[in-house]
Amino acid sequence: MMQGIGHAVCLGQDIDTDLVIAGRYLRTKDHSQWVAHVFEDLDTSIAPRLKGAVIVAGKNFGCGSSREQAAIALREAGVVAVIAPTFARIFFRNAINIGLPAIECNITCTEGQKIRFNLADGWVEAEGKQYPIRPLSPRMQEILAAGGLVNYWKARS
Amino acid sequence: MSTLSERILGAPHGNYVDRKVDRAYVCDGTGMLTLETWKRMGAARLSDASRLHVFFDHIVPANNSTTATLQHELREFACNSSLTLSDIGGGICHQVMSEGIVLPGEVVVGADSHSCTSGAFGAFSTGVGATDMAAIWLTGETWFRVPDSIAIHLSGSLRGGAEAKDLALSYVNRLWMDGGTYCALEFIGEGVKTLQMDERLTLCNMAVETGAKTGMFYADDITVQYLAAKGQTVRPQVPETCTYIRNLELDLGDIVPVVAVPHRVDTIKPVQDLAGLPLDQVFVGTCTNGRYSDLVRFAKIVKGRKVAVRTIIVPASRQVLSEAVRTGILADLVDAGCTIGTPGCGPCLGAHMGVLGEGEVCLSTANRNFRNRMGVGGEIYLSSVATAAASSLTGEITEPEVA
Image (cartoon, rainbow over all chains, first blue to last red; front, side, top):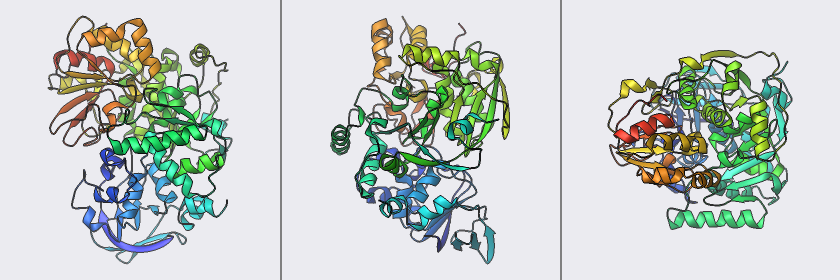
């Protein structure tokens, strides 16, 4: 979870969680439903590109509703990590809590480019260039390294 | 010298702290995912059920049997585990928490983004997702990064047709959708004395629309009196001189009626610039503007007249509805042609009770106008209650009359 590689999927700024997964699809225990409708209201061409993807978004990704289904939908769709200059704080916590790296880093996105990241060492690499990232707090690093908050507490109870 | 967040969380800004949570709550939407996640954490132990609340407010009564089945499971769990349950019709979690539950100085966490609302009492109140909430159920604690604070200095008093909602939309416009990210907003200055609790709740409610962790007022005489009427005895909080990372000054006398236009909360226009825009629906309610005082203002304007467009009014809580019944304003609303919904979130999140059709335009007193939120292809304009009332009578966006 602390490091990975994927192809870039470029998104704009201020993407709210309603656009990640709409309110009308939330009421189910079947998480595949969220994958089936991820980004449906933003652009239906995004979903097919998410397997193995690193989402590179503009500022304030995940604003709006606290719905954790947004982070779960991305992880279940095969997203490896989300990179943005800033995140809405609830989405940021949610992503780390379910083991999906949310990385604060400002990079220029080229669709499909290879992106590598290493959170322990604190960098993102795109097109041969390394970018520094804003480090996670020690607690968040522990949570992410455990694979999420469920595993983190399982190991402690 | 500390900000209110620093005082309540007990450390200077930038520090990470673990804090016991005084009140934690979920709603029917996030509660089901919280329950599922809490079970996966293995211990099946609740830290202290007396601090945990469950509210049925987002899709109530259930809109279909899938929702009903999920709600049934959460309801049974809440009853069997002695969590405090507010079942259908009780109202919106944030509103009920503001009816004498949240007290100044408390740490309050809700599994809903608008949990910042209760900051109006001088509490540190913020939203989290389902997994964080599951851990709070398990341990009774959570971690926080003590936020930097942004001061919103208020002077003067509201006048003309402007309401607290216009002030809320105006400060969101000044900070933009991410100007408050990772920060707390503190509303300070002489102007706060002119704002009643309902107005402060409206202002704090929209703090998250700037990305802020919470919006806060220091508890003062108005807070003390409001809570005394709900049977709670509290003391005022005295502000200290402290350092803010940003200062925003707003003269309440300069605030004019505004509307947030699709699809951004931070993009506003004066109501007069949009006058005449045809509407398909007016919606009054939500954790922003579904309180008794909101219903009173709406009823005053439409009393004895007829609305010209379908108008849905959803009281924020049973207490609000009950008061509206007792004082007769509910009859005024019904006689004017308004439709009344079950206390709760109503159509705000596009799940039921007033979902928009393709191309339909709604003027709403809610806090979000994200694309497709109230229905695919629908357009949402956000306004104050007075603007919504004036517009309901004409069927188009209309400036509120000045009383």
